[in-house]
Image 1: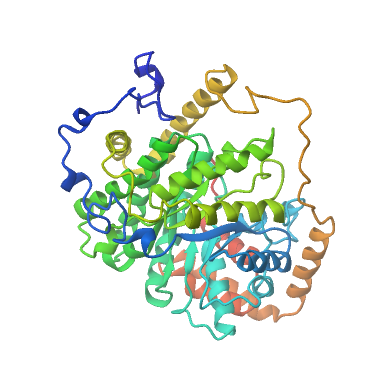
Image 2 (image 1 turned 90 degrees about the vertical axis):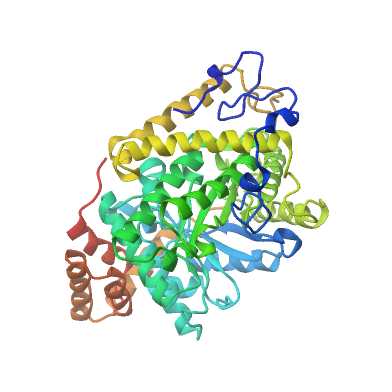
Length: 532
């Protein structure tokens, strides 16, 4: 599909997407370029230069460090540590059982409880997670997909208990199921049933939680699976097209839900390609929403995005080098106009980040924001012969992918045919082979290596965590009205069999003290479980 390095003359270097890079760029590169049409002003269509007129000259991006491990109480403690260090938003990771719709006492959860994120089985867990946090002041991003509706409702109910209304809370759920089938794998239900859950969330939040971003359409995990930068934005925007069309088909007006859509991009090391990728994605989304879907509200066509630095770029060898990688990736995200940013800890190729690593990661953002000077003018890369040429080339290659996906019947049909997965697999193989063949330098891995590099102190695990979490969940289940629980779960299954919005019955089930795993099982009983 997209160009590869083999398409370029052998004397020219290429970007990670295989786009040839000239040794020098002059005005001839932009001879047919229309600045008004392709660039515009910041805060104005087509938003190449950013979605807000003032960008960082008005306020910095949200510094939102991703955290979540062990128990709800432990994660709550880390949240407070990060807020105390100057973080301006929360971002929560959940363990695999929570992501896959299993309670911690389920047989399939054994050995995974609290390992890659926090375990949330019950309303009590969510109460501990959010204890003492100013939910009317801080926004929270939750990286959750198949069980996103349940976690959102838990958050809403706990906020309500704290005296904060649904209209006052703000944040984001990832809720991007299509990329799970493409790249990540934490799906539960088949694709078309998952699409129903997503559109039900759109409708529910438009009526009840208006300041919540209902989906973070994610290229991050597509890139982590080995895609190129071009594939990252092409496949993600194709997924976004499918979500918008599904919501419209369900009877929603595009301008009622589209302003709350957001995106999640990966930040890699190829500095100029990454900055150009972010700029191209905004311009493409503007065209998609105005030309394809006829959106009238300007907010519907503004691509707002979060960036996380690339986890797959972190090396276990000489891990302190990752501080520099993260700084380069962060600067590209800032110069590309990100709305929020997570910076990885330098030790994350080895373990969860220690407090020292988490603090350095946050300080990286703060140094860029307060010391580098890049925030003092909007879009300082605008008009660069190289950057504008690269932005145009990335956009063109991404459109070619979207046209190919459209020809296959759209993102869902292309996923069912394995198209995106095959393309990513080929790109990942080529990238890895280039490192193995020493065609691509990774400092500390295949060049500039050392024999005696000491490992950093890893994050300490809690050997008693799973036992205590299971005991807590079992005690919660023992202290409730069995008939009320069974009735509430039956109502969830009944709603799944029909066409009613699922979130109302799920919310009633949480009030009846049903657990995340039990509600997920009720949906499994009707929707089935996806098996690739």
